[in-house]
Length: 73
Image (tube, rainbow, N blue to C red; front, side):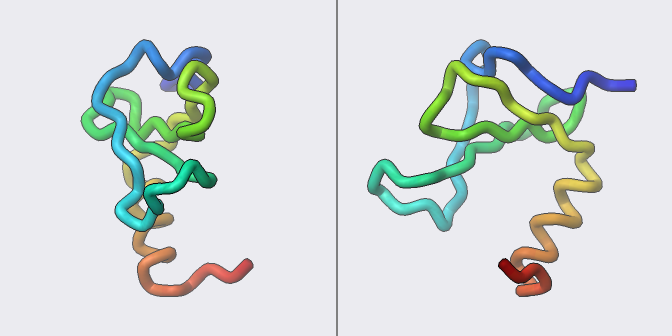
């Protein structure tokens, strides 16, 4: 089973913010493409903090559901 957390996400390079993130210092998530264990996701305000690693298929399903408006607050 693949590791599902990365204790210090700053050790990885290539993070990108969501295209829906604003330019202010608000709450943003960053993702990293091409990681062998899945899709790491971290809070942009704490780059040295942990990242959660989601299986690629699970992350893809989540992004699709968000784009389709299938999730409610």
